Length: 254
Image (tube, rainbow, N blue to C red):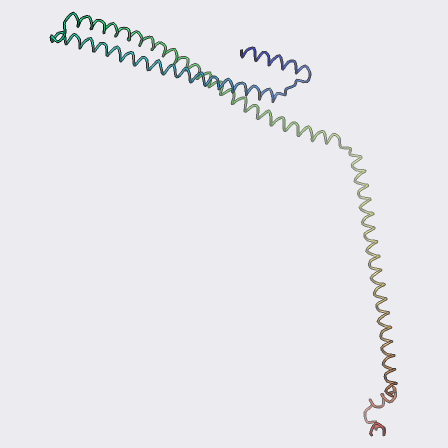
């Protein structure tokens, strides 16, 4: 059944490979590992069964030996009773003979069970060796699969990088950089121009503010003169009053 199954898989793989090899080496390896693990599980179950039969045969050997010894002991006891007069000699001889026959039967059964035990133990040793080999093979394949996956990853990355490098147009890249430099230069000049305009705008505002301050001072001076005139204070009288030693006018004295 397994052979037919594997032949079917091989034929199926060949049919697909005619189109595009269908399964990559990684997928094929993964499937192979899965198949081997299934075989390993089956082998372990079979090993457990054979070991159980070997254990049962070993127990049978011991049981048959014990029964054989028990029949021999009973035959001895029968003869001893006949010797002491506790049992008729003819009856004791008959029963002792039957017991010895049973002894021989159990000895034969013990020998047969021992042969079975040896066969089962030999099978167990062979199966354990096969299982050990299968485990080693699975481990080897899993390691190779990890290496293969790593190699595929590296090769794909390298292929992508090399492909990108191969598609780079050096002359086109240089032209692009030159256009970018030109655009940056234009943007820098435009920024500087806006800066100068901003400085000019600030200077104009300062001039306007200065002119407005001058007009305000003149207006204040005029208001002061108007107030003096209203009070009858002229500029000459104010200067005379401010000079020391100048006699006060009668109006001022009064």
